[in-house]
Length: 266
Image 1 (tube, helix red, strand yellow):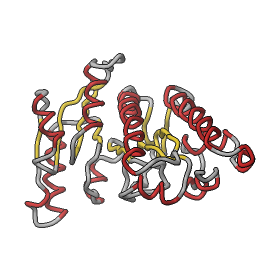
Image 2 (tube, rainbow, N blue to C red):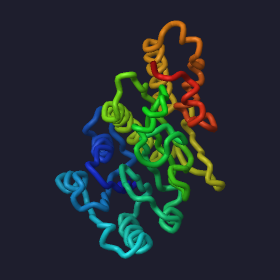
Image 3 (cartoon, helix red, strand yellow):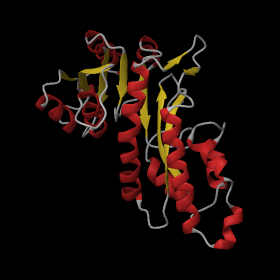
Image 4 (tube, one colour):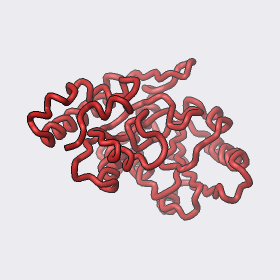
């Protein structure tokens, strides 16, 4: 049984989705992974309150009580090591981790980010997606390295950006995909299907498996929805559906440039 530790800063909705999947509260269970600890940098975080109510070992480390980032991360690393994790998951952990911390958990540290990386790294991703006029937005699970939101992409899920969307409605739809995507990646990692090679590149034994089928279903639905939103004369301006597959599957080099080219929202 692989040991999983989750780091959070807020309400912990991805934590809850992961716990339900691993504990058997959902239709699918995982005998390969166990949630052994939760750490929050905010004592008031709703996710840490929920974790304690479930009997999950939980720790709060208020980063504001430390003189600098290095001091905070030294204590954080010690607490994480105390759980003897096989995998550390950043699920809404709103702190940029320094090189010293990241190197200690290299290849065993993943993050879920609310955009189709490398498009829109950092904060305010949903607003930026709407402002950019892209048709596709989504979520990415990736390995963490020393570049902000720049580690190897493991899996992505895409949603259409609708003409009626505001920041909240788009965020809600992306979050539903996060709740499906993250638990599956954790299970696949703990099953030995996902890892980094010696050069820090993704080595996945399921590139044509569950994750890609999930991405393909997302993309087919998304492309169909996009076609229904545009005038017939504008259909020709849309890229082929295979381009949508490539973007949501993380298979092209520059989605930030390609996304606007798919077709702007009408």
